[in-house]
Length: 143
Image 1: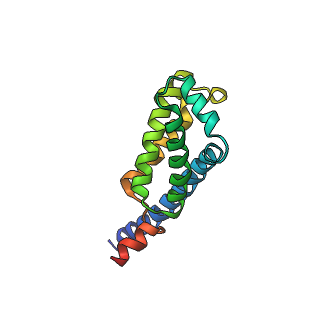
Image 2: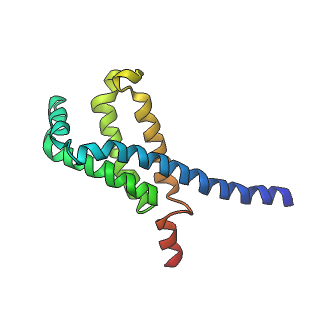
């Protein structure tokens, strides 16, 4: 019985590190994609959105750039992680249906497998939250 309890405790520690690594990797990916949009690429993003028929393309270019860049930062530091995950999840679901679905499983053409992995990771973070190594955890422990 002692060994089972010991492994259960280990699972919790592993979960903290697993969620931390997922937050960091997803955060880097979203910052990497949001930074060029936010700092110099808004016009090109708006033009692309207009070309695929998205209404209010200029407005949504700003929204997507902000969500991806600052959402990525929020994931890395673990601040408002469930909210950041939700907004990024909406961003990726829209990207999935408006852009990636028509390209299929082709990496060269921006296929859907990358977006599906991001969606799965964001659902995980939305469900589990930031866990131990985060501002969310520090704030919840304090209050």
